[in-house]
Length: 360
Image 1 (cartoon, helix red, strand yellow):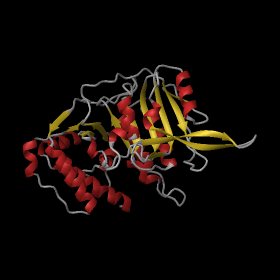
Image 2 (cartoon, rainbow, N blue to C red; image 1 turned 45 degrees about the vertical axis):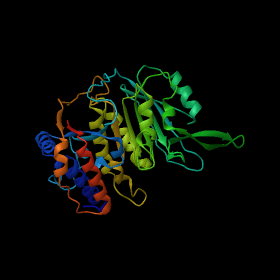
Image 3 (cartoon, rainbow, N blue to C red; image 1 turned 45 degrees about the horizontal axis):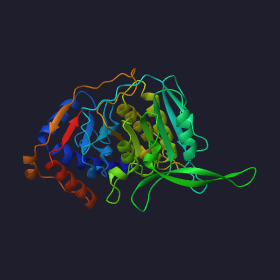
Image 4 (cartoon, rainbow, N blue to C red; image 1 turned 90 degrees about the vertical axis):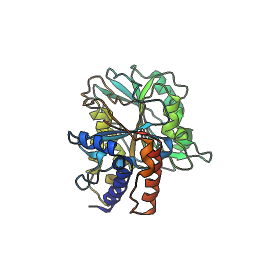
């Protein structure tokens, strides 16, 4: 097993033992549904636990190198345990086509990479923002055709001194009659929806730190969290919890969007993760295949059917509540390195709060 996958396995197994295996009723539901394929795991988490790499969740009893988020028919996605109940919020499936406003931002001094939009189909179409300035984005989204819209931002993300997540647009500056310089223009992540009159349903942030949460940046101030909080129409956002390679972003985006016409969003992302894992490691692309776990799917609802012609394998939820009374007696294994021990302790606190682990 490659060393990177071995580390992911260690982290994933610790998270599994602490969050699912340590609560017998949750574990029983997991095993029962796993027999039929998958399962699809909706994590209803308090925001302070969003910093953990839940996408590497792995059942220690599963075959080697097998993760829930890459298993056929399986997925891992996150719901805000501190927000409205996602089981009672519904976003009806949309009539295709879904038009995406596509932004690829490459400042002159900090080139992200070349990521072309996927080919338009009858179900999913793309409108390119060129140049990738904030003003051009606002103009493009105002003039976009169709009622069903989404956005894609590919470029750099960063956290400011006041701990607010930003995405970096560009400002074209003419150097001479032939060339432009492209200066950085950071904007708060929520600027993609703030003041926008058009209803956006789905968003992608292929930008480093766009889904990053740590001790310094809470979820509500992150790029993803602030966007979800400020928009009533956006139901789903995929963001990057660490920097992502441009080649991996290209494959992830293309596979996910080509699949959502015939699947649910979470299962489309699972297929994309496997395509990224299959990237051959080379001297020029040494890290692309490792980026399968970087994208994070946050959703306001447990209904992840985006287009109304998609086939959905969604079944009724099996809700397994962790009884608070059992938490003090739970013994969490701490046989690994300090990072894993910190994860295990934090998840033990979660069990004591009586949060749900929903196995779909």
